[in-house]
Image 1 (cartoon, rainbow, N blue to C red):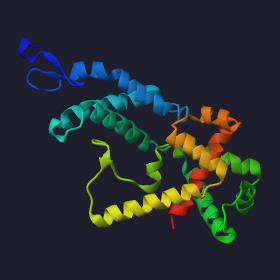
Image 2: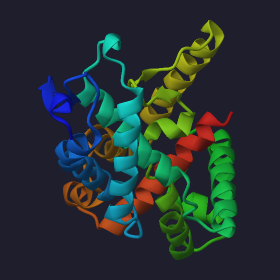
Image 3: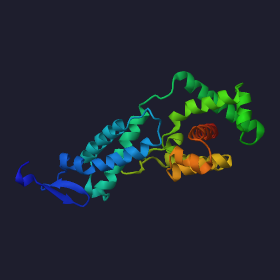
Image 4: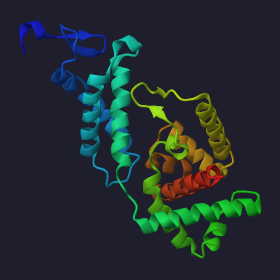
Length: 245
């Protein structure tokens, strides 16, 4: 690196004297942050997801952020890069098909069953009622919940198709009509969560708001980690069933 291009610190970013971000120095500086974000996601994902895969995706997001960052926007590079790092990891997870087609089909059947029972009963059905309607034993039904849970561990916004600009962490510009639809759908999501059985509502709060992992939630709720997975899958299925009509 030539002397005139030496690295200088400017805020939380790393720049050359010409005002350009120096890639190698920046990766070295932000690698601990990439690892931290990867670890925070990994503890909430199936064991099949490798930490190194998340870190590699995060580094790609970091490199992309160098070319896209615009100081004139006002956001710090640190905030901007963190959004892109996490966004790249989420994109990597979205490309993975964790569930076989047969399981996905059974998951859709479960959603439809829960929706039908809620309309019929006027309340959230209990597990036994869902299992009976699906003509399954409780053991078979809970196994289905375990099988489908791995595909439901992405951010809750995915359930309502929220458009989040991962470059700035802000909602992308859209028409007033689209923004109204987003607002209405978010209100529906809040209402759907509020209508969950109390135990599932607590679980969703601990997982998505408090960002606890499944093991920690199990300790608080006094159940096994596998049982937390089942309850989480059932809660997500209830939410999908409500948001689909």
